[in-house]
Length: 171
Image (cartoon, rainbow, N blue to C red; front, top):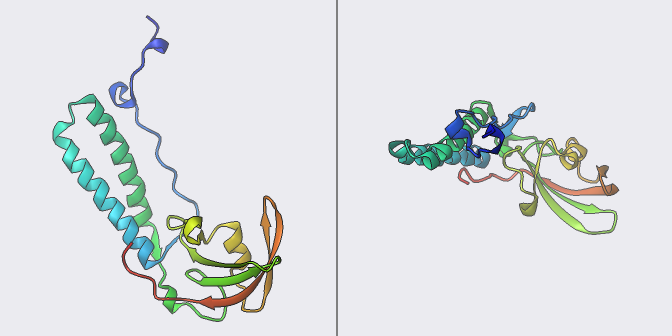
């Protein structure tokens, strides 16, 4: 029978999963972002240790391959992390770690935090410092208007407040 018709998972064939790509951007993190990465590494390492005694099982071996790949990724993110304490940033302009209040051209208020790539979560109002929105905001001051180039079209935003709160050390 042709090998093309035989289903085997990566751990049975000896093939490795492709590595999770690391970003080319500087890995700026807030204290909370660093703590989250550390927690992820600890959880993955704990999962790996629990599964190691059963590594002869093909399903466990497959899970171990995924865990070890994810652990390498998170460890790479930790190794490249550049910790920025938002409270130490100059308060007169938008930089990494800023909490920004703004009003769009339709009068709708918004609040965003400029955070690291691994911390970004738009549902929580956290945008990566390399996102188009953050790039439009970085360097702006209260009272400035910036244009945000979005796929849906350009949107003008007016900066109404900038602050650098002390972010929690834990995730």
